[in-house]
Image (cartoon, rainbow, N blue to C red):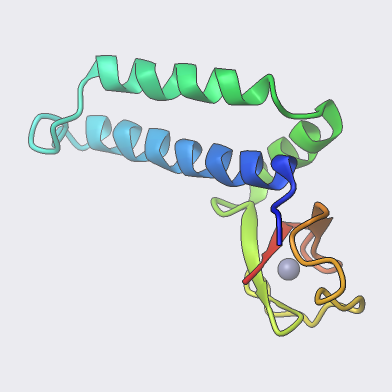
Length: 115
Ligand SMILES: [Zn+2]
């Protein structure tokens, strides 16, 4: 089943944000050289992120940014109709639509993808 492009984009965006956070953490703990990171790599991650943002609708980006203030994982899997971010059962079944629509958890509001 095809993955909706917006879902794919937010998953990649989350990945980049986690990687950028890792680089920033490495910098603050002064292990940056050990981990092979440098400022150029951070620039590459930031520019990949910027490119990605242009592909996202404003409404999805606003949701993503809102979730970013609360959670490090803004996009989480749903399995057997249970959000694996907050472990609440979703009232609407996921089997019908799979990952062809962008859906959010009814409880924690995180963006969901079906596994
Ligand atoms: Zn949830």
